Length: 518
RNA sequence: GGGCCGGUAGCUCAAUGGUAGAGCACUGCCCUUUUAAGGCAGGGGUUCUGGGUUCGAGUCCCAGCCGGCUCACCA
Image (tube, rainbow, N blue to C red; front, side):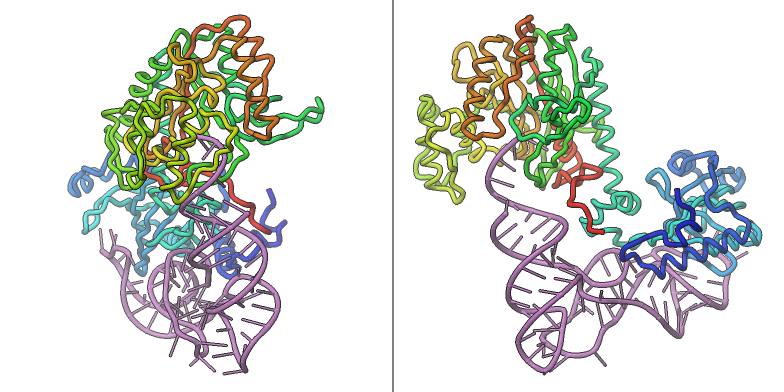
């Protein structure tokens, strides 16, 4: 850590406001001249600011006046209102603000001189007793100030806060300091993750950690990031999913496992996509996908209760409720949400024949501004899925399980006994977003090899997101995997829903941005 | 990557092609219950960058950089 002297007073570089910094550096020297330690090593508060507010906000002025409860607390100076030989300030900590009142005759000349040298943004400790001002605000009547650290750079404006989206993301610490809503979003996210763990642990699930660096990026269909291990001289991929490792654990006899961790996908960035994102994946032996539908409903209700205290919330102008979860097959969803301006409209029977999807893609394209381009040699199942995403996805605002996915787009899922062109799989849509993906896991090693080989074919035709063949995974299945159901839930998107955030960047503390030029 | 929109003081924002402004923040003075405290007096700008048009460009044109939204890929 470079000292002030070592850097020659040059604490910031680039186009920072040098004169404002210079002023504050001079004040820092003046504070040292008063005999204060500039960067003390610790401070021992008796209360956090939220604690003070929780414990004393109901006490009357009279009760406080007779008791004069003593407190010592620490935080960041957010506002200052000097009044000659006295003054007020608000100090922020733990997401709350508390007013302090400093009188020269109460703190003494040295501490009052310190008060005069404070800037908005400085960190201080305050000791004193609680009282209510004439206007009734709970306030610390200071008897002693302690200097804890200087804010050399000025904070954003007190009234409008920080609005510039780029700075809010690049300098999240500023966003958190001055935008109360930003702080609340990440507190909600933390509660959400805690609630997921609570629920799964209660259901007998065990949390595990599987590799983030994998010799083969499996478990999903996406392009991976590549890195290199020098000692072994091998390329490794950042995982696109933990799926194949978690199922190896099911083979090993951990019957209920889950992992909450990052996945990395080398795809585009959007309001719903960040290259690294957080996924809950869980696997349950001796269960099928219908068990997971029921579990998902219970899990999400538990989470909503934990985060919001209720099952209804607003997202993007829609009132969404977790009271009821709809169920539709993919084909039913296409029929249901078929564009009303289209000249003809499919029935379920019209979609029965596998290749009929192509015909309805054409019908869809006649009515659509954004026609689907599906190569003629694509699998019919792919065409059906594309059609579903184009027609139905944006309309799935209330929670809806979409059931029965085509075989060709589901290389790891078990076929439906009565319809081998489809698999036992569902995705959960809420607020027009895909939030979860689950299926009965394919556990027949021979069938799995066939599926991988079909994916290999797609890969050779240039589909970089087609699934690679994982020989050890097939070997694991060959030792026998129990019938198993597994599911992934996107934590970022779930957080978006429960915090009414329109962009995934609002729920990720440090979203990926192009690096700043220096 | 394509389309649309944006970038002006530390922050939030103004400014017909004609002297770059306001509020907050900052500096100095006054003020011992204020709270977007108040009063008086001040300082602060490579208008994102680089070209061009023009007597004159924050403003118009071109290129670039960064960001937002959106489409495509994906979850």
